[in-house]
Image (cartoon, rainbow, N blue to C red; front, side, top):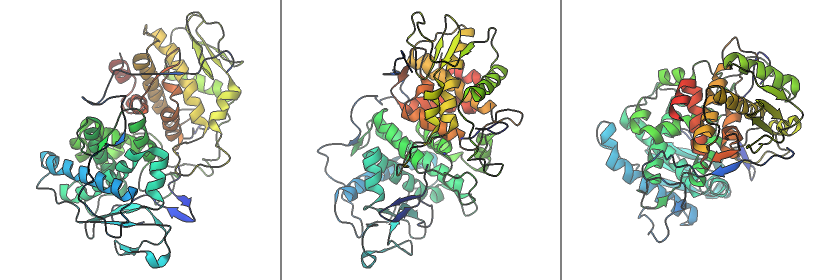
Length: 482
C-alpha cells in the first residue's frame, strides 16, 4: 500500500536441497487488556454433507488403488498420489459428460521420480530429464501426469496435509480434461488454463467434502484450509513478471471456490473475457518502479489516511472516534479485540499501532512453500474491518455472531478493498495487497471477527466472504450474511 498506490503476494520458486521448485505447467515440466479472537463453529455449510468436524486425509482401511507409476518406489507418497488419481479419475468418468462433450479419455500413464536422486537415476517425463526437477505436471504430448516424490509432494504433505497433495494432483488432472472438454486450446492464455485447472480441482474437492470419495475424507476446517494454503503458497509472487502463469493468491483461491461452489459449469465459463471482467479495476501488475518496496508505514499518519478513505467510501451518520493509544478499554458488554477494537457504546475504534504494525513485517527467514504474505495491507485490513463494524451499527445490524456479523465484516472489508483500486483512490490498492489480505484471513481471520472477536472456524468461509465483497460489493454482503 502507498499513497496514490496501495500494495498487495508467496514464493512460486522454492529452493529445497539445492533444487528449484517451479509450479506446474499445462504442457511442459517446467494489545493490553484485550482478548484474543475466538474461533467458533459455523453452522453455514457450503456443501450439503460437508462438515466442519471430522478428519481429513486418507480413509483408514481402504485398499490401495490398482494403479502403478513408472519409476515409482511403492512408498507412501506414490501410494497417496495413485489413490488420489484413482478417485479423481473415477469422479470425472461419471461426471464429465454431464457438462462437457464426448467421453472422458483417462490419463494414460503416471511417472514418479525423486528430485534428490543422482542424475543417473533420473527418467524422462514429457521429453525432459527429471534430474532435480521439483514439480508435478500434466504433459499434453503423451497424456501423462508426473510428480516428484522426493521433495515437492512430501513438502506439500508436511506443511499442508495429505489433502493438499490431492489438490495438486486434481489440478493436474484438470489440465488433462481441458482439451477434451474444448474449454482450452492452443491460443488459450496459460493463466486462463491454470484458472480452469484450479476450478476443476475445486469441483472434485466438493465431491470429497460431501463424503463421496473412496480413499479420502475432508472437513471444511483444517482439511479445506490446507488445500487453500498450498493454493496460496504456489502462486505468482511477482505481479510484474511476464512469465506469470498461475495467478495471484486471490485469483487462485477464487478459481477453486468457483468450482467448489458452482460445479464444472463455472469452470467452463472461465476464459480471457471472464478473467478480465473479474479483475475489473483490481491491479495485476506494479505500475511504478520499486512499487513493491514502497510499503506504507503502519503508523498514525497512514491509518488516518485509510480512515479518511473509509469515511469517503462508506459514509455513516456519526463518524467513529479513533484512538491510537491502544484498544478500547472497559467497553460495556463487549470483549475488546487486539490489536484493533471497536466499542459500539462510545463509537470508538482503538488501535495498538505498534502491535498492528508487526503484521506488515516479514519473518527474518522466509519459510519454504509458505502461504504467509507479509505487507502493509495484512495490517490495514484488520483496521478496516473494525470500521466496518461501525458501518454495521449505523445500518442497525447486529455486531455479534461469527457467521453473520463476522463474515459480513470480512465481506464489507472486501468491498472497501475494491474501492481502493479505483484510479481516484488515495491511498490506492497495489498488486499484492489482495494476497496480503487473503493470507491474513486464512491464517488467523482477525479481519473476519465480530465485535467480540469471534471468528468462524473455516478459513474457506472467511475467504469466501471477503471474495464476495471484492467481486460483488456492499449489497451482496448485506444480503448474503444477514
